[in-house]
Image (tube, rainbow, N blue to C red; front, side, top):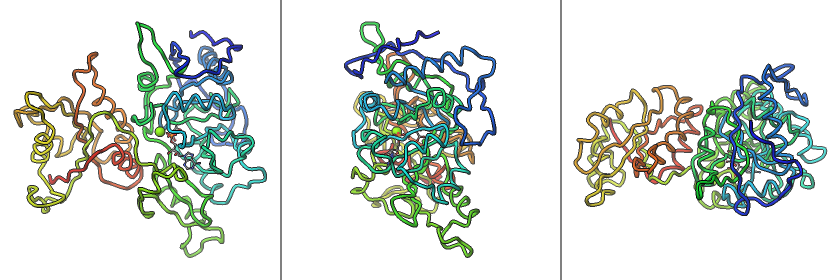
Length: 460
Ligand code: TXA
Ligand code: MG
C-alpha cells in the first residue's frame, strides 16, 4: 500500500525543482460501480465501491494528493491523463513543467457530473440544443466540447488566456471515480512528455515521467494510477460549437467519429440542410477534411486544437499508403512515385543506410495484409544492408478500433525497444496506413500524419 503524502505537505515546487519516488497505484476498474442510472449525468457523488476496500483507500490517497496541489496520472478510456486540480493555478503550472508543454497549448478539464460543468462555464450560459444532444449521446465518453469559460473561477493558465474551455466527462470508471471522490474538476492533458506519443498504459506514463539517478527514481509526480490499458487508444474528439455561430467544428478528430456526430445532429433535426431541420440547426465542419488545413492557423496560439507537431517518436516514421496497382511506375521521373513494397523499402534503405551499419527497421502493419506478407517473408534477406528488427501488429484488417488501440503502443514499442541497453531500438518505422477516413479511421490518419516525416505510395 502506498503511503499517503502528508496532507500538510503543500510544497508548491514542481518538477524539476522537486522530484518524487513515483508510486504506481493499481486500481481495478471492474471494482468500481456507479449508483443510479449509468447515463445519469446530473447526479453528484454517485460513486459506489464494491467489495474492495483497497481500491477505495487508493482512490482516497490519489484524491488527497490532488487536493494538496500535486499531480496524479490516471487512466481514461482514450489515453492516460496527467491530472491536477483545474481550479488551482499552482497545481496546473506543474502539468506544463512535468510535460515540457508549450504554454500556449490549453488543457482539457475533466468532470464527473453536470453540476461541475455549471461551475466552470460563464454565468448564465445555457446549453445549446446541439450541445444538449451531443452530451446526451456521447457523455460520458471520448468527446471534448468547448464552452464559454468563467474567467474568474478557471485560472487563465488552464486555457492559456482563451475565453473558451475544453471540457469532457470521461467514461473510464477510475477517471470518473477519482473526479467524483476528489470533488475536483481535473485539468489533464495526455500524460506523455510533450511531443511523445500519448500513453495508453501506466508503464508508458512511468517511462516518460521518471528518470533514474544514482539508483534513485526521480519522478515528476507522486502517483500514477494503473487501471489497465486504455480501450480507445486515441484521444477525444475536440469540438467547437461556440466560436462560429451556426457551425459545429471538429478541431481534432478522435474517439467519437464524424459520422456518429452527423447522425446525432440528424436524429435531432439539428443538421443544417436536412429538409425538416430546426431553426437552430448547424453545419458540421471538420478541420483537415472540409475545412482547409493551413500552416499559419496551425501554428497560431488562437487555434491550439489544430497544432501540427505531435506524437513523434525519436525514430523516423514513414507512412506506406496503398495505391491502385495500375499506378505503379517504379519511381522513375515522378514526384510521387508509386512503388512495389520491396522497391519502397530498398529506396528508404539506400537513403538511410550508413556504411558498415545495419539499419534497424520496424514495421507496423495489419496481421493479414499483403504488405505484411510481402515484407515479412525472409525479412532480413531482402537486402544485405538492412533487416527488419521487429514487426508490430496493428490487428486485423477491417478492425480499425484495434488499430486505434494499438497505434501509440506500437510507435513506442518500436521506438524504445525492449532490451535494457536499447540495442533493439528502431531507427526507421514503416507504418501501413489504413487510409480509410470512416469512423475512428479519420483520427488514426490524423495521428499518423502528425507522427510521420514522409509518405511513400505503394502498390500491392
Ligand atoms: O482524450 C483526451 O482528450 C485526453 C484525455 C487525457 O482526456 N486528453 C488530451 O489532452 O488529449 P491534450 O492536452 O493532449 O490535448 C488537448 C487538445 C489540444 O490539442 C489542445 O490544443 C486542445 O485540445 N484544446 C484544449 N482546449 C482548447 C480550447 N479552449 N480551444 C481550442 N483547443 C483546445
Ligand atoms: Mg496530447
